[in-house]
Image (tube, rainbow over all chains, first blue to last red; front, side, top):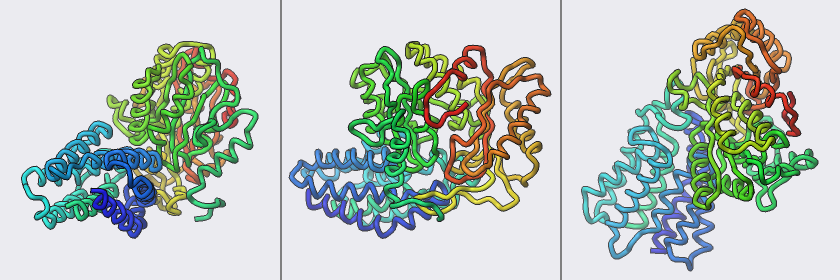
Length: 199
Length: 332
């Protein structure tokens, strides 16, 4: 699992590095214009800590990464986006599909509680929930990579039409309508890399 | 972007180094963490400690209000981003010997999530810590949904009044109860005239036409009552005061503490003209003003604009408001 997770984290970092200016620009429409810089900071920490803790069990390593991402990123994005990283450490190779479902269930539950956010509020949940729904209705995820990628793209696109009910965007004149949620975009990037590496 | 800084990722650290050096007689870093600002002379442990965690970029708040008679600690986040719950908890832990600890949190999503996490960690570690959520901005949620409103400049009344009361040795519950009362008696409305520039992105935070103002905008450019053509101070103040009076039931003979806060690039000249119009508006309803605060305290970089906050006060609040404080940037 270590090599799969290493691939995931390094690929996510590379992709965020090449997209962070775009993410900042996206955040200028609905926030204060720094989401790309913030998530890049988080992924840089994830990469450095993963590589320096290769001897640790994956669960321990991901818990350390999650905490440090939260500290480095701060704000709502740090505390909410770091949740998946801690949960992802509970991956079980002997029962891969089932453990991925559990990881998503736990992540969603914790995001909802900590962020007081629900489906359709225009947040990162609007990526996690459709993916979980798909996973629960399917088996043999390895053969469904294409479909999972399609769900990720579609879910992201759907956040465009949503009115923000949480965060700074809910106070905007247009409630962020017409723009995809920046956190949803970076989550889509990270999850795409996750399935690419783990499945 | 035209700002005199060094490296972007060192803005906050450079600023805090400068702040603690410039005010080394009154404030210092925590021994273990240079994102935690403390009073040089800590309060005695039989007293309740007051802390606030907040994003930076809004100076002098909140680091400037760490001092005797005001706050005991400020946990400083990155530009416009709340500090993590882990960091806030580290700040709370410094006061684990104190009889109690109150974390003040201005109602913004990131601040609330991280503040709640810090209090959970503190309670798991058997500390006597509570969170006081502060909100006052009437443009951000309708009457009846006060607890969904954003925290604005009016949170200042809570800092100062609880700061003074905690110095007298009152317990945590008494402080929380007065804090809630001050919050419920406070109303704030803001207006944006021009956007400041985010030092991170280098871009304006929002866009307004040259002849436009925006009433009810939040400290990060969040919207409120909408755009209007710019007009005289008297007209703008009347519009804003009418909204505040629609929201709160003021009576003849009330004594309010006004706070006219500039958001970074509003001249003292303008702020004093605005105060004059606020005072005249209140006088026509036979409402008196007590020791107003007029200056730039809660800023968003070089944003132009201001807010009007009113605390409908009682005698105890006024006494605590005007009691002395050593905080480097609080000047009544």
